[in-house]
Length: 433
Ligand SMILES: Cc1cc2nc3c(=O)[nH]c(=O)nc-3n(C[C@H](O)[C@H](O)[C@H](O)COP(=O)(O)O)c2cc1C
Image (cartoon, rainbow, N blue to C red; front, side, top):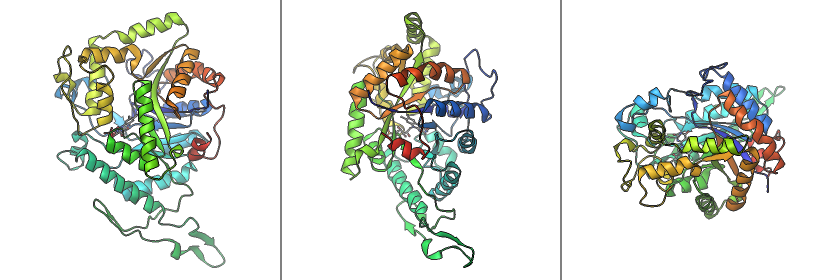
């Protein structure tokens, strides 16, 4: 077994943590930074490389054309902006990478470059940013559009966005600030240059007006469609990946590495992290009962699964008969996520069969004792040749401890998890192995 990179993907974003758990709200308030700071400290202590915080800008009402399920079960809403949380997380930790989500569709590149450069000065190289293109029409309608622009065009736009953001970061030469007190020169004006960008989507003069950053923030991305993989393989440092079987994981990683190589990059520069949800039990009996509980397709479990895929794909899954196969589906939103859902059971399966297969543990969940989970992740790493995993789950304090306290020693003794993070920043930690 070889060392893997691990991180935590907070799929609920800066949103409600622990709703539905008997300990909801006990000793913490999800609206305030402290619970996320405590979680970040636990992640750092565990040796995880990074903490990624999801984001979105809608009150989802795709499922059944109403926000009822989302609001009554606190799924994807309410949600606060993760960017103001970043300085709190940085101040609570010293080595952990902090990765907020940022929409290339709704942030002007100048605003994003300035904001991230400012945060990177606080972060001393620990900042990343998860670039999303915000596929939903609901999101677009909050930003002056009737509907979101076409999927591949959105990526074309995001590609230009990344180029502009990076050009702005490079608009100051690293040694432009001389602070020559005797000569009376703070910055050398010959080393600060406008970018004069005039592209298809953006027109930005530059230069950036922040101080230059020693290291660019780590770019994280999750494109899974053909165009999404092209974008991620060309531009991204870390890839977030969802895949339900070892075969699909391997195919995805191989494919994105091929894209990177075709773009002239060294594929080993990419860190592909697969999202898994560890459910830690104490013994075989608890494992059996956790599996039985998860595989029970109650109406609440069906609603939970279907509102989630409706939100992520922009397709209303309430319209489908549970006992019939799905029709051919397309989306202008997250194509990879939809594809992954549809293909998590054999072609021709009914909606209920797909849900059952996922509930049985064929989705993201890895259920077992700490050693069983370590074995399973080690086996996956060998089969996929992968770079590592992202644990997903809420940061309800009990959930973080329930998961990491028993799992960390097992992952370490299996040789999968490093014992300590380095202090050279996120990029350096990712390059360690
Ligand atoms: C693990 C993971 C995390 C993601 N996080 C976010 C997020 O925080 N906000 C968001 O709007 N989209 C998020 N997405 C959606 C992706 O950014 C991307 O738009 C999506 O995978 C669609 O790309 P595709 O059509 O190329 O598959 C995430 C996707 C995955 C797989």
